[in-house]
Length: 268
Image (tube, rainbow, N blue to C red; front, top):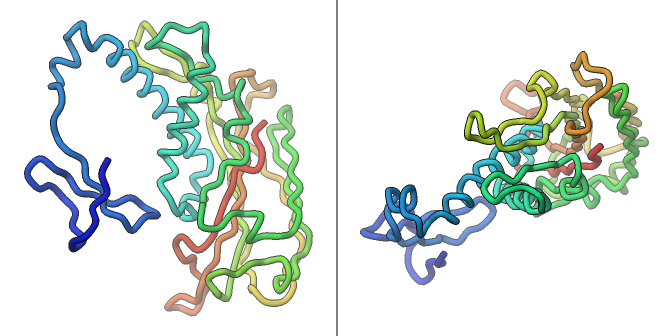
């Protein structure tokens, strides 16, 4: 991947080159066309390893999407290409399956929870530097609940209002992510548990003033699942974010995109 410098910013295709930008960067990148044809990759024995890698990558992107969906209510807080970072985490998880066959290795988040724990949805600002009050979280797997406690906040001391906006609120997401494996019957990656075990819940606090003292928050999030004893291949993901807002046309607070930060605070 090359970076374009020295002339006006352009995007799109130009002969054998494609110019594009990436969220979170003001650079213009260039990618050259060429390489083996799709037919060669699909049929030639020389590309057998490539085909296996491509098949596994499909599993990685499926798990990455599932992980991103777990904090979907916080999507507006993303200030860089989060899905790329999650694809990389999914690949790390896949490589831990040392017993699986290349091309069909599983993706067991349930055995690698630490790789997702602490994942930040934002890079320009991180949760701990914006919300400087201690956040206490507990996941109760049997009850399928997450308890979040945030003390009252003196905004002048413990809230970094980096965009100088008049309002803020707390957003929480609590969701299920299922392990994935390769189904030889369907010749593709599938979840290893029933999709009925999927689901999420979320909470948004009222809009609060960025001046003065915000009240303490003690919130319980309950997953909408009927299953009591969750299988080991089910992972619970709790994410928390701070979103800033301004007065809208009707005078009521409304969110400002990318004005905030978020993080996966606990995986259980």
